[in-house]
Length: 178
Length: 177
Image (cartoon, rainbow over all chains, first blue to last red; front, top):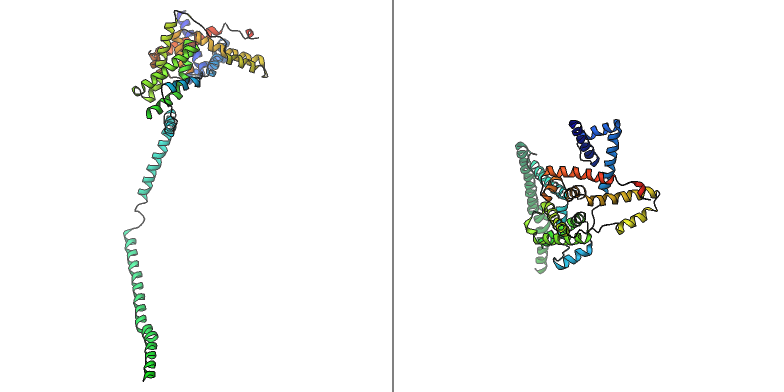
């Protein structure tokens, strides 16, 4: 008799937990299946579910703002600032702030990692030596060009195109004076 | 500067919880006003004594203790002032315009009846029920707030649910119209 009563009590406790939504999945399945078979269990579950639904709809009463203003004016100065908002964001939504910190850390770590991988794995030693040699050859060609330019400037252009007409001019002047 | 910011944040976050809990516990709006003011002042005075992340338990514990003090002080006078409030009457009037006035009025009255019945629960059961079901605290936070073991919280909660259901059985929908 006692065992039966105990069993019933336990069943009622489980029905209540299911109705209020804090039972385990196993208990939920068990009670739902029982409710399909047994009208008494179903009625009890419905009654408690209706009450729990009504309880969950109860909202928290709001504290009148005028009382808060009076309190603040007498005890604490109110400051509305960016710091205030920042503080509220960080503490009222810890998940949000944790997510933001996570994203920033991920960005920093990935950028450091990518930078390291890009550093020096593009050229081999042979390629570097080849590039140096090509640079030297290019410089030698440029040097030759400069040399030729200098030679033609001093021997051909200055002598033929500049000095000779000047000499001719001076000779002509001398002849006129003589 | 930071203290004020911290205080403002705590007030914005918990003022309604404090007020609501006080109403359920004292069943008197004037007392709830006083308790809320007192708790807010205590928060300001003890701002550096608690961790902001664990503030909820501290605040609800302080609120609970003040409510108990008020109830003890008032027990001699045996005052009971709560009845239908203005919001409720307005909600009834609004519900008349809806498609099924009988059903909507039944829901409104059921809702109010549940609130009133919660206020009629024994003090210890009421405290656990309101903190867990209405304020949304976890078992551990409820245990810290009213200073009892977690297992007792679970037992009280179950008892409160049963008691609430028992009391609501006396209510019949036909009473409404």
